[in-house]
Image (cartoon, rainbow, N blue to C red):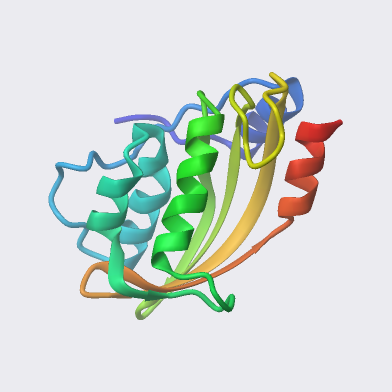
Length: 161
């Protein structure tokens, strides 16, 4: 069994510019997770596999809703695919999770070295990261509602400095 990553390791790694290894992601070929909490954790940790289409097919409901106007399941996949392509060592680490009924609150950190163009920002080689808090509602073992709170502007500023 793999040892969980401590907060000290995550913060220390982010400050030192190192990458974070995920220790418990469920492979895309594994059986459907049995609880809302496992579904959400498997989704976030699947980013290390770099196959977001499989992650979306497995973990994101076809009718998924985001609270941002004009931002839907497909645009979410497209944006996250750009992030994965621009950060060769991208990792998402789940820091905390709480679940009640079909809702799961997750605090996670995303980080990696900027190795390819992202949006209009040329590769900088810098390590950039941000922490986010999300609340996901799970239906039929897939995320159907996704609310996220993250300082994405600060993330972009790390790349442009």
